[in-house]
Image (tube, rainbow, N blue to C red; front, side, top):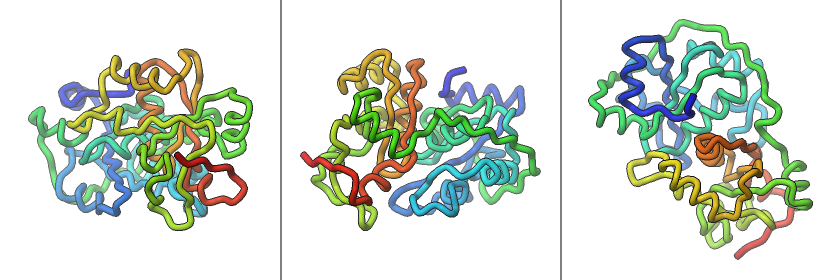
Length: 275
């Protein structure tokens, strides 16, 4: 099954079979995406609160929780690991792939991202509704895929011995260290040996993931080997999931550094390069 679904496909699915639709909007600038959900969402959708679903005890932002926490959060949203789940967001592609990746990492069997999000849904003539939702609780049996995410030591080894390419999804200015990091105490720059592929290069002006040919060209431009399983990283593990999604579209595997630059850049024992 493709990791992407188009708006018209989703409309057809919803008219003929049970589909659980999830709004996973989140923005680094603090936009109240829950308020946006209340204002307008796909009928029957539930709101995936990225902050609440992530590890509540972690010092780092948006890291994976334990299986019990994730299972309870998804069950409260009425989601089962066997459901057909489609994740979207109101704005251009940004955070929905992180929710897609988390769901897959914890064992969701059938999960996709709505390409183009709410905008594409409306453009295809889809209706919206407003207000909060109160889904019936469900059972989500969470099973962590330990190969999906890597820790800082795995990234150190990959950079040292060249076993995996590290692709950084932050913008070029942040990667070079020309602009300050948005989180206090995090140094600017990048990991020595990492390659920059801004997530924005993979998303078109309509907020959709680009087609397979354009995605392939973007990854080839980084020098990524055709058979390599890269590690993706970003500021806090959110947009790194866009790179994972794009690679999945191309039939390739990838791992995600969950701590990302929020961890690497905040430490004093990690090497950093600028320029």
